[in-house]
Length: 112
Length: 114
Image (cartoon, rainbow over all chains, first blue to last red; front, side, top):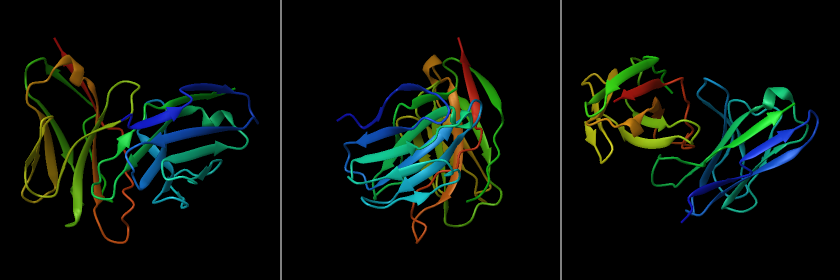
C-alpha cells in the first residue's frame, strides 16, 4: 500500500515547454486534488476531481489542465510553462466516508 | 468556509505540551475544525478534526470552546520530530458542496527545541 505517489519528484522546464505531472493512489479514493505551494505560503487548490471522468476548477486553475481517465490516477498538465508556475505541486486524495486528505510527497517544478 | 487566524510562530521545549491556538470567530454551525501539519518539504499530514466536542487521538487532542469561536491543538509531549507548520482549517462537511476542498492559510510554525 503505497498511498499517494507523484511522478516526477523534480523537474526543470524552459518557458513554453509542456509537461504532465502524474498522481496515483492505491486506496480506491473517489476524490483527488492538485495543490501548489509557493515559498512561505499555504497550499492553494488548482483543480480537483470528485470521481473518475470528472474534473473541476479550484482557486488557481489558469494555465493548468487535468484529466481523471482512471479512478486511481489524476494528471496535471502544463501546456506552456511560465516562470510563475515555479512551485511545489502536491496531490491528495480522500475517500467518501471521511474528510481526511492523504497527500503525496510533492513535485518540485522550476520554470526558467 | 470560515476564515481562521493563527500565530505565525511558536516555540516549545522538547517533552513539554505544545498548545497551538486558532481563532475562527465566524464559524458556522455545520463547519468542522481540521488540523493538518506539514513537516519541512513533505506533503501535509492530517492530525485531527472536530465539530464541537473535544477530540483525542494517538497524535493530539483538540479542544474547541463552547461558543466554537476558537480551538486549541495540543501535542501532549512534543518531540523534535513535531517541528512543522500546523494548519487550522474550517470547512463544511456534507451537503451539496461535498467536495472536501481545503483552504490553507499560512499556519503556525512550531519549533520544538531540545
